[in-house]
Length: 409
Image 1: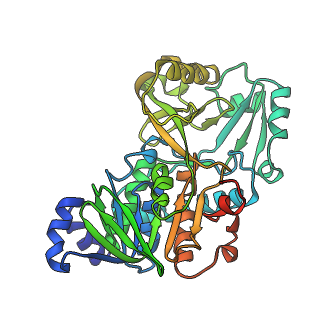
Image 2: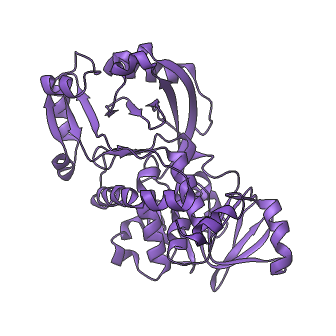
């Protein structure tokens, strides 16, 4: 680590509280905060964008209304399921694989700059089946290119490679390239690395509203004052649609609640602990670098509460135990809920808002925000640098596409 980086990391706390930070620096900049780009939203997507911009030498302010990674990102399982996820468009499948590769490439640099270990592990994913018919139905629902990244384990191979799985399992598909990480750690690593590279990361910034005129975006009004810029990136997930209404744009978000649980195996039960992620049709079981195993997730469209229900957790634990019986002997640690931001057509709003120069959006990633974080950061930085969505191959993710397709009236 260079002396310059060490000095930056020693210079103070990782993030700044909004009110305290504004009070401290207002005298220096005469009441205004300014940057080339302001990123609104301190979840995984916003943090990845801030890091990418800062790594390219761009001046950036990242603002978050609460704490970094305190909302949707804190409720994710952290799977990089580029081959296992059922993407329905070629562009999403392509971006997922590119992002997974990029995350692995970023691992050491993020740790160096932030001092935070993201817990990235690559032990592969197992998709199990109870019988041949179940396997065939699954295969019929997959895109052809996703089937090339897997190998078939029959009953004997499966139980040699995964002795902790139920003896009633017919067989499984194994995808060696799949990996997973600790999602909050990743978001905080992105934010910390961005700050080390010169970005301002401010938490506790409330009441954010966009300001624009005939010339395009001008900045944001916030609880700590006005911030001016050339570019604003809206990356606030669930609140993105409401924020865009302030400037007359329609980008609806559908909340999808999900519950998840964490368990831990005792040392004497280590042989029963899965060492690979189980990615089944009704549950996923994810062994984490911190020794825990995470089990998720329920899916409740239209729900935005964060209440953890007995019914939801019972359903998850029962499904998980049907695949990995040893789960019944594990210690229950905790359960939590989060809300995923989905869009009407299943694609994120990713790109420049053509009707308002300088305004960009990067939200609506639904259940793939962690997986798509690295490539989203890279694409947004490319767009801000002047590349077009068509040139980058993401025109179908255009933020204003639903109005263009007359899906919104």
